[in-house]
Image (cartoon, rainbow, N blue to C red):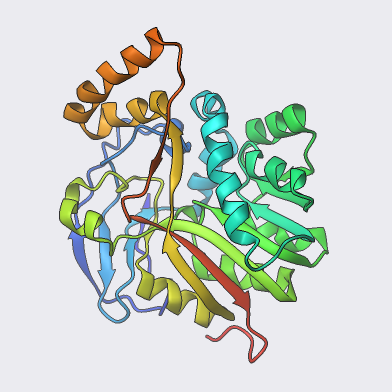
Length: 308
């Protein structure tokens, strides 16, 4: 059963249809909600709020259905890509050090805990929350991390205040980004930093590809641009500090895994390069920055609490 949703940012129900649904409802699969999902191009109807310009999915299933799938995710492909993820998160921590260098850090949606492990190596008192039971068990077993099963709604149960709260590629998956940001604000110290990455549907690359933009996916419920992200931050009690293009570092093997579904021409072109690298027994990593993901830094605002 699908449900019509009002705008999470301004509450309006007045919206224009941007992309019709492409979902085959007879082929619903929980694997489509994993980080390494191949479900590019399959999405619920995407609309744009006429009042504030937010892009989001409506109608869509009840939140309980999404939570059901996220709790049961297993993602061996992501686990195999650990070295590439570490390079991405090492860069993230370097960028974070411009604002905070140590203290208590909470990651929401910590998946296999690779960012938390890197943060701990850099002196952070790091812990995480992750909905997937499989991921939680893997993170504890591989790295001995302090990570618990739950969602952003469980942040307050830790009864701690954090210097940093991180959400890497998480916000677009949530049932209410506004609620998540307001809860995150309450969990931060007075000078605390919120850092996250998310999609940028306002980027040139996303606008150029239109309906063929690969990040139109059923697991993505919201599609932000820089203007809407600033509005979200200000209305949830944050002061935006910096928004930059987010860069993902991936192995050539993982890039091929994605290109096989996204772009067959590039897949065949890069596959020959991968074959040569295998013959040479050389692992190649590439940094991808097409501008359609953004990395956001904000500070808890003390001038006033979150606004309705």
